[in-house]
Image (cartoon, rainbow, N blue to C red):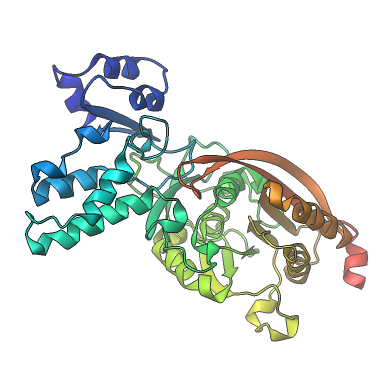
Length: 413
């Protein structure tokens, strides 16, 4: 059902009319509604509005005792799918249940479990597996990111200091999380840093370009429609390195915004998906005059083990959420010192979530950066969102921008 359909419907509930004409948060009004067995959910996302029917309570769902058809069950399970959050002010309205929890209709886990455990004796054998699989997917979506299957997210990143000018859609694949491959998830700090790059561009002297040289772009007309961008050439020969790139959001955004070469690196087991995401966004990157390469880089390895390519030095180094071990501050600062050009125009920017468990590592990292003659010249705090534990939770982050301090001392060492 589209919004136009809803507007023309004589049965439109009064609370939908109030939502459309007021500033009351859509989520709260819809989530608490009990006026109809089915509730019309309206979602506002950037430049579009959409609406669809969803269920407010498990009693509104087709009961297995009535032997619903395979088609009915599959359509119901499809309607309960949770769209992956893009961390833009929380989840979409259609993902929020009556208790304010993401995708959690009252009693739904039990309902889905009953489907998975039912023999579905009245259903044709050829369709049972599809129903069980669909119900299992809906359960996993509500059990936190670690239980979810592979997902695809689209992040909208501003390419100009004025975010109303243009936002480009970066589409990323996140494989199922197995073992300790946390780099297969996009984290809140990466999204915040990617959005901050256009604001910090004037602070990157090796890359910053005159405003008159910027490429004119056509604004987006819809959330899933890629922007029309005029082809551009790199206006800078500067090189950019991302450490611990994960799914590649920061590095891809940097290639688009800075219109230069970006090397994205991570551990070998992460690089396969990282390369996939760079390839998937290749047209977006090249249309802006940027380019990307990916290769594995283990911070614990000695310099002698690096290939010639990996010994390149960079004008700008980026890292988002890179600290989750007591060993990481020392490893990260050594890697930064190894790869950052010894030039007054060189910069480092790091975005760190302020998790209580890693305050010691953050303090250690900042002290080591100072001991390596890197001076903090700008910093600030951000609020982002994440869906690691199921639902969408607020994440407070800190970002810092460094440059070489005593450059003479650095070169002499």
